[in-house]
Structure formats: C-alpha cells, structure tokens
Image 1 (cartoon, rainbow, N blue to C red):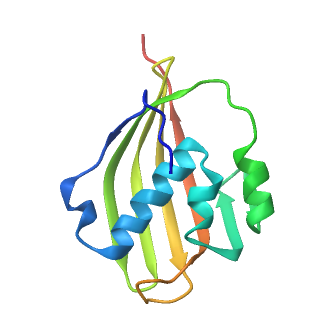
Image 2: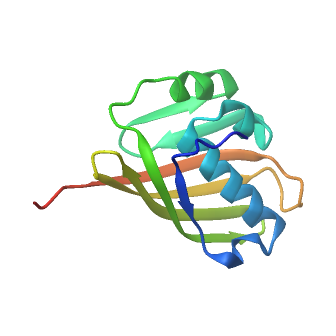
Length: 135
C-alpha cells in the first residue's frame, strides 16, 4: 500500500497487538487513501459497503468505482482513535482532516466472514459526520 508522503497518520500503539486490529488499520488507511489494491487484499468478493444516509456499494467493482469518485479536498491527516475487534466483528473510529482544515468524524463497523485470523471483510457500514468550521 502506498501512502502519500503528505498524509499524517495518528494511531494508538495498541492497534497492532491483534491480527484483526492490524487488518482494520490497513483497511482504514486504504479507504482514506483510496487504495483499491490495498483494500482488495482483505475484502470478500461480495463485499457490501454502506455509507449510512448516503449510498451502498456491492462487490469489488462497485467499491473501485466509489473510490474513483472525485473529492473536493485532499486528506492531510488521519486520526484513528480506536480499533475494536471481537470474533467476526470490528469497528474503527476517528477523524479525517482535510487541506482546508475541515474535519469529518467517522466510525466504520466491520463484519468478517468468520472469526478466524485470515477472514475477509464481507460488510462495512460507515457513519460520517462533517464538522463545521466555527471561525
């Protein structure tokens, strides 16, 4: 996975103490950087990605199309606050910071195909809240 040099990533040190936490960190970074190849390594072929209140994408090709959509601002910082895993589920929350200093709080809830260490992600539900600048 190639991370832009200008992207700063903050993540608690304990996010590397379990195999699924490592996978969820990698997926979060891949989503943030729109790294389709990095995402596909850990995704089931029939992946379902739902962005709550917005859209749903089914399958890897739809995921690729979603990642190729243009964005207005560039991501400059990814602040991962928590990565939680248990059995076949997991969650990541944090904040995206963009070049115009706007922020987007996020929480992604993941469902794996099984509780095994090498299980693929079969579903992601994303919750995102845009923070308004107060100045």
